[in-house]
Length: 413
Ligand SMILES: [Zn+2]
Ligand SMILES: [Zn+2]
Image (cartoon, rainbow, N blue to C red; front, side):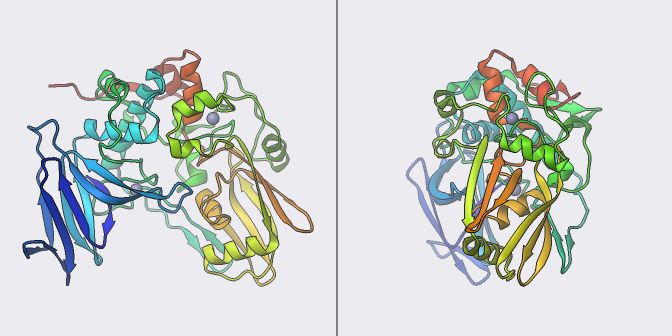
């Protein structure tokens, strides 16, 4: 069950020409014929290969820099539910079909088959882990002087996973046309990663920046051995990046790593077009005047810090990502974390990552940063480069998930 989104009103068109509209009426949904109900189920048509449902204006990349709306097509069934004044749309779809869309949405279908196979295994493992997961229960720290919070999955009550980057990008069957994606899923049918008989929580992000991050730096304080720090290269080359001066040196340099590539041709094969608009992710730079930053932090935190005087990293993870940052303002000073909260507070959308170092001059702040995303688990750009260099999907998975093993957990009937 995938949560697609919430709508004020909804238009659904079927591939056979059937057109349906739904509105909110009180605390119920109403269709064009005036039929009212708490929920409507639009049937799947498994017997018809070409059948799909099309929904208009689905929002993707919510709150991120690639935020946009598009029409999307779905296989399987659609559940429409009244939920908090809106129409919640949930797609009921078999996991192997779900994967086709996820892989196509996450990666450009033109990239190498070994990369697509690696992605099929981690997306399948992640989704199964999510469905079977016991919810983690640690509470965020929110006091007057400190906000340490995180945005984990497992928060969805009405469905298993959402369709956005929060879980895995799922955009229906709109893009699932490439035969390579289909082949990658079929060739790895039922394969998942396990560690000591448990399904791995196979996190992944766009670009680690040279070294990978730990789970506990980004979400609650659980340690997973298979998400140990790795250097994104064939030998160990980074120092202990939890030490401030090592992290600064690392971020300000451009060490060799699988994900350190500026090969535009390769990147355009890996990234979907809207990701490809942003290619300076291995090392990046942002400048804010004092006024700009103060305004952004005020808007994003809902708290008035006055003029921001300083940003002080207090703790960094294994990739150099900051997970406790002190924001010093004229009116208030506060410690914030973890990584996504820091990225959210310091940008109109989100900073690429929280692996950054701060330099101040008389006009404002320069942030020099490394990587894109949380950096835990597989690095998508690094994995793509590995595949390009001839590594197969098992090599790639073993590089990013130390000690994890591949297991075929079900077979085609
Ligand atoms: Zn989600
Ligand atoms: Zn990397």
